[in-house]
Image 1 (tube, rainbow, N blue to C red):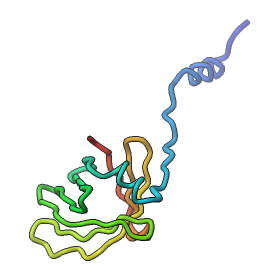
Image 2: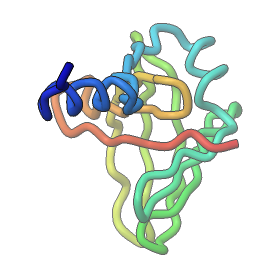
Image 3: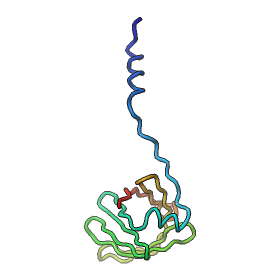
Image 4: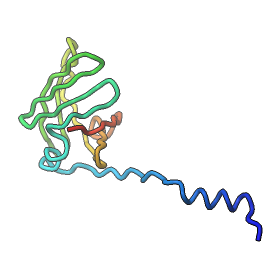
Length: 121
């Protein structure tokens, strides 16, 4: 019996591993946030952040130092910081979602930009 070209392609396609679709889960509580994201290096392109358990925030954006502070408020991580010698950002609250070693930061309680970070050690 002769197998057609399309049947061969279909069979081979079944053997190719397909990456799982990301299933981000919203961080709902301060204890969950602390467990998943504090004291871990969060990296995104030319930036990294470290949200410390004592409420301090440090990092770097395009070789400029980042310093600031964070608190948990009404289901969000809120921070005020400074990049380099720029003025403070003012308080901005972020929702966070996590899928394994990847985190998404939804700025302004999900009303602004989304940043994706790799969660390091």
